[in-house]
Picture 1: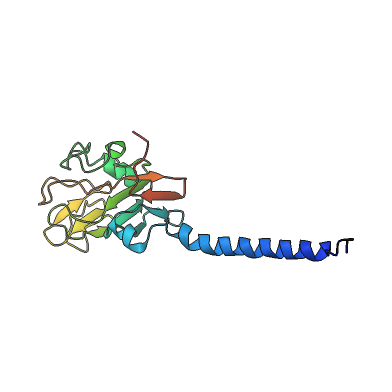
Picture 2 (picture 1 turned 90 degrees about the horizontal axis):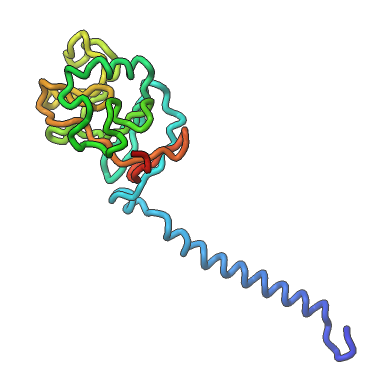
Length: 199
């Protein structure tokens, strides 16, 4: 204790305690406020971007996520799938994706930024039905031709799409499957609903 009767140790303890208590109070107040910056489930359904881990998708598999309340398919293609796309240019209605069903950076034969991954909205462009993923070649199970290379088939009215989501010429669907805006954040993560800087 000093000459004027003040206990300095006690003063330091009380000052430190008050500072810590104040810091905890500020943090407790800030957490709910900061959490309002993350999109809610409702905001995501309306159209907020959705970040997706694609590291667990094996070649030939499709991962389905929701964006704007719609199913978005992420197909990982292998070399055989990519080769099958090139060979179908004469059979599909819009082989170079000239009709605006995709952002400019996906306006190519593979309809993607990275040829290994196709990202499309899982609705048929005829009447909005959800096509089946018939990725394997061969005719079964919908009576498809034996030379079917694999792709997407809408059993409602018979529309067929290849593994780039390009529509075949002889079906009711007028255009290719829609490619949503997206960008790759890394080799293992993609964000749906946010445009890529790639042109």
